[in-house]
Each structure stands twice: as C-alpha cells, then as structure tokens.
Length: 341
Ligand code: NAD
Ligand code: 89V
Image (tube, rainbow, N blue to C red; front, side, top):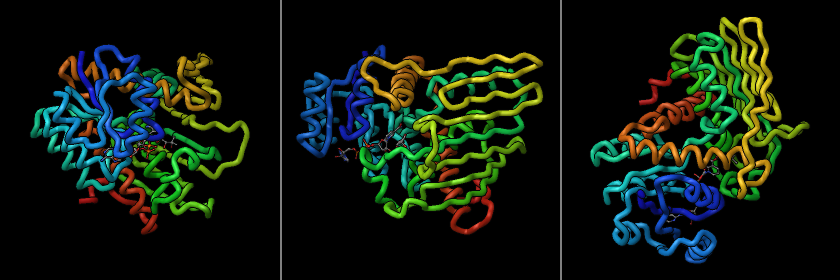
C-alpha cells in the first residue's frame, strides 16, 4: 500500500479524497492546507489522522510515497519541487503551471529525482470521452481527418471557484486546457494554432469564449470551441461534445452522453453516461468519476514502473497549446507551437 499526502483541501479536494478511498493500492495518511480550519474539516470528514499547515513539515513527518497537489497553479512549482526533494512521486492538478518555464523546471526536477510526475489532466479520462479515444485508437473510423471538441455552457462556475473570475486569463487556461488535451489525445500533437477569444460576461476579468483552430502534425485539423457564456437548453455542463470524421466513418458524442458510431455502413448508438458514484452529484458526476480513474492510473503506473499517459512531460505539450492560443488571440495570427521558446 502506497502512503500518500494531500496538499490543498479547498473546493475540489473532496473529490480527490473520495477518489483516493476507492483507489486500490494507495492510502492518504496526511493532509496539508495553509488554512487550519479547512484542513481539520477535511481530515474529520475523510478520517485522515494527520493534519499540517506547512507542507515541508508534512513531508518530513511521514515518509510519503506520493503527494497529491490540489492547489491552484501559482503554488504548484514550489510544492512539486518540495515533494520531489523528499523522494515522493507527485500527481499535480491542472493547470500544471502559469508558465512553460515553471512547467519544464518541474519535469526536469522529477527526472533528476528519478520520480514520477503526473498531471491530473482528467477530462481525457472521463469514461464517455475515453470510449471515443479508444474507438479512434482502435482504428474504427480510420485515421481521423477532422475533430470538433466543443464545451459550451452557461453554468455558474464562479460561485464554487471565485478565483476563476479574478484572473487575466480564464477559459482557455482553466477549461480549454482540458478540451485541447482531448483534441491531442484523439488527433495527435499540434503544429499550429489560431485562436479568437471574447469576454461576454463583463463581471469577470478574463475571456469566457474561445474558438481555436488546431493544425495537427498529421496535417489534419481540429476545432476546439469553449464558452461559459452560452445560454441554451439542454445545459450540458460539464460535457465535452465530440465529432470525429475518418475515412471509414464518424464518431459523435452528443449531449446527454449519446455516443453514435457510424462506420462502414453500420450505425451503433450507445448510452455512454458515466456512472453516478455513491458520493457524486449531478452534473459533476462525469468529472468526479474521472478523478478516480486518473488516480488509479497514477497508482498503477507507479506499481508497474511505467510513465503515466498524462505525465508532466506529456502535459508540456498541452500547456504549450494554452500559451500559443493566448499569443494567437492577442496578436491576431496563427502561432507555431514550437516557437514559444
Ligand atoms: P481552492 O482555492 O478552493 O483550494 C486550494 C487550496 O490550496 C486552498 O484551501 C489553499 O489554502 C491551499 N493552498 C494553497 N497554497 C498552499 C500551500 N503552499 N500549502 C498548503 N495549502 C495551500 O482551489 P480548487 O477550486 O480546489 O482548485 C484547486 C486546483 O484544482 C486548481 O488548479 C483548479 O484548476 C483545479 N481543478 C480541477 C478540476 C478538474 O476537473 N481537473 C476541477 C476543479 C478544480
Ligand atoms: O475542470 C475544471 O478545471 C473546472 C471547471 C470544470 C469548472 O472548469 O475548473
């Protein structure tokens, strides 16, 4: 049984703590948050014996095998490097870092320490999305030549996560990052990107609409479109809708987790709804289930000594898309993803 510690017991942490209870091969033995009341409340709710308000103290006290970092991006680099310096493997929430330099530094620190660093990039692990990725990877429609990955909602994310209203950057960095990662998982790595953004909700600081064209290294294209300003029914938060064309057919993931596969003259319609785990609540259940799946993948990767699919090194490529999208939107031009230095 691997011994883990959690850093950050804010809004999203209850999902991780519920998740860790379901994961085989791992146990959370200590929690840390700067806020004594929050960390104590989480420890009481989840029956964790040890609480700390200083991450260094937690690392020194427990001989942890791994650390789960569930803080917001500005604290990721110091906390990840701290955990690595104490010989722990790390799984860190998205967005991995505020800059490519910080992200690269964390990946290099993990390599130097000989430890696994994985990013909790969970949308590609949502079971409906995963089914689509696996169908494409299995060649069901042949090599895809088009993908649309679409997340459009009017859901109020700001009441749970007020920091999302306060940053200069919003939807690409917080949500688009997931959808860009899904496009990468389906269509492969990206050579060029072109983005147009808008701020419709004037009560927030950052952009809440982004429409992004990706040119993949294969030469094929994807459209990633995201909005938190869309008023429509059904409200699909937090579903990513997908449409992928290949020479042998089309795969669509439509609202309500309706998965349609049309290939080689046959059509299959599947209810790909994620399960509602006992502790989960709609509409978050889709995200909540993926937390357990990604955590299990992290522990399985540690046990097998293999690199996780959404490793820190892999996530550099998703983060580069975020950076390139902001450059593209600001400068009104298409940006090569390898031009960011
Ligand atoms: P939050 O602000 O509610 O909680 C973060 C907690 O970290 C706070 O309680 C804060 O006190 C603590 N913290 C910060 N620095 C610390 C330090 N040095 N030592 C100890 N504790 C520290 O944030 P949140 O909404 O829970 O989000 C956390 C992260 O999870 C964000 O990066 C967010 O983008 C991400 N997130 C991911 C998903 C997903 O589906 N993958 C969903 C929601 C949030
Ligand atoms: O998944 C996330 O990162 C969340 C939300 C779904 C609200 O965008 O912040």
